[in-house]
Image (cartoon, rainbow, N blue to C red; front, side, top):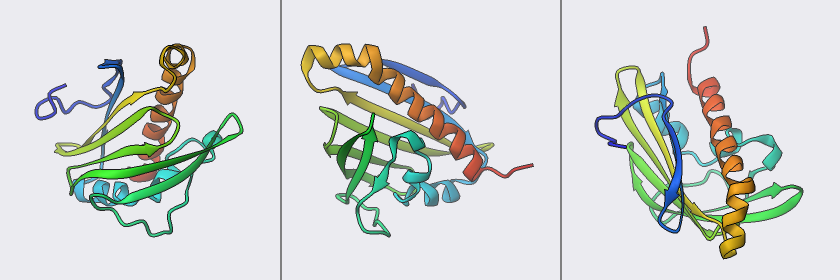
Length: 170
């Protein structure tokens, strides 16, 4: 996807990437870039855009400062099983991009790029997640049976909630 020229709404792709997988989702949000950035720069807002069934909570004391090398600790539940997740902000380029990388958690790799650009209708946003399940061949099977649909479901949910939270209602 050419990020400089392809600022389309609702592009989505899941594909093989290296030894893992890549999910890409784009969304045009009818709000100016500074407002959208302000929302996403507050990690506390992640709780509100994550599906309830995950029972996702940030454990890091709030407000959570957002900067390169910031660490954020979460807890969620998958099928009732508690899962701890710790990420590091490895790239922070206000108001255009940041990257959070899982350092401890359920995946062998999770690198999530959040990218934002001005758009004639507001702000174009890209979520790109490169991820890999643990456990080799079992992880590969889990991806096809379960994980791919779970990750796609989470990001589709986010899309709808972001629209509800950030866009003006008629």
